[in-house]
Length: 422
Ligand code: FAD
Image (cartoon, rainbow, N blue to C red):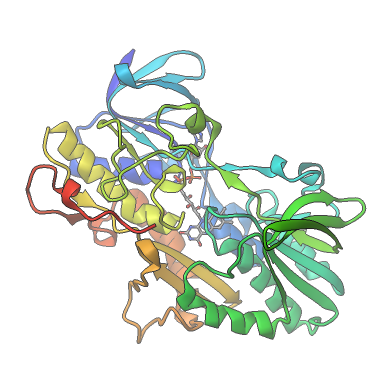
C-alpha cells in the first residue's frame, strides 16, 4: 500500500483547513486527502441563499481549487479502516498507509428518517436550506407565499449549525414583514428540543423576534412524517413522558433533517457508542489510537458543530500531529469555541460565540459587537467577511485567525487537564 505521512478523510471544512495548517508547519509533509466529491461547498452561505441574499453558485467551488498545493487528492471514498496496520481501505479495495490519520467526514443528513420527506423535497412547498439544490427554493417559496401557514422544523440535537433552522425562519419572516404579510402568513417553529437556543444568554434577543414576527413557538414537537401532495406534516409532541401525534396543514415547510454520524464512522473502530469519532476534547487525538485525530461535525467533542469551530480545531490538530510525528508530547488544546451568527433580520445578526459548557466568548470587544443584541456590523461580518475568511483565511492557514493555545512543555500535559463540561 502507498504510505503517506498524513491521510485525511474528508475534503470539507475540516479536512482542507487541517491540510493547509499542516503544510504551514511543515511544507515537506506528504499528505493525501480522500474525498469523492468534485465540489466543495461553503455551507454557512446556504442560509443567505435561502434568504435571497447570496446566489447559490457563490457557495460552491471545484474541489480541485480548494486542495492545498502539494496535497495528493485521492478522489474516492474511504470504505473501512485497518488501524492495526495504520491503513485506510478505499472503495475499490486499495489501501493507503499513514503515519497519522485525520478523520473529518462530517455527518449524515438523515432525510429518510422522516416518512415521505424525500419524495416531496423541492415540491409541494417543502424545502430545506440544508441542501445546496434546495436553498434557492426556500427563497422562491418565501417570495410566493402571500397567506397561509409556514412551518419551520428543528430535529433533536446535535445538528450542524444549531441556529440554522431558526435563521431560515427569521429571514423569511423578515421578507413577509416588509411585504406586510405577517398575520396573513402564520409562522410556526416546531422544535424537537425544549429550548429555543442552547446558550441561554442569546435567548432574550431571539425571543424579541419571535414576538415581532408573531411566531407560534412549539417546543418538544418533532417532525416524523410529511405528506407532500396533501400538504400535511405529522409531529410527535412530547407531553411529560407521553407522546402524541399531531397533524398540521402547511403551505410552506422548511425542514432541518435529523442528523447522525456517517455509516462509515458507525461501522469503524473509531466511533463512540453513537458513532462520533471519539476524541480527547482538548487535544482532538483519538482516545484509543494515538496516531488518529478527529475534528469537525463528525467528532465527539461537545462543541457547536460549525465551521467556526473548525477554524479553531484545525490548527490544534495540525500542531499536535507535527508533535506526534516527532515523538513529542501533544501541547495544543482546543477550548470548545463555536459560533452561530443568527440572522434575525436582513441586515442584523445576533452573534452567538461560546466555548465548552456554553461559556460566552466574544471575539471582538463588546462595544463593537455585543453578541446579545442584534448587530448591523455582525451582519456585514457574515455577508462580506466570513466567506473570505473561509476561502482565504482558514484554507490558507493564516495563523492570526486561530493560533492554538499551547500547554507548557511537560510530557502528556493534557492528561492533567480537568475534564471539560459537556
Ligand atoms: P463537511 O464540511 O460537511 O465536510 C465533510 C466532507 O467529508 C465532505 O466533503 C464529504 O464528501 C466527505 N466525506 C464523507 N464521507 C466520506 C468518506 N467515506 N470518504 C471520504 N470523504 C468523505 N457553520 C458556521 O460556522 N457558521 C454558520 O453560520 C453555519 N451555517 C450553516 C448553515 C447550514 C444550512 C449548514 C448545512 C451548515 C452550516 N454551518 C455553519 C456548519 C458548517 O458548514 C460545518 O460545521 C462544517 O462544514 C463542518 O466541516 P466538516 O469538515 O466536519 O464537514
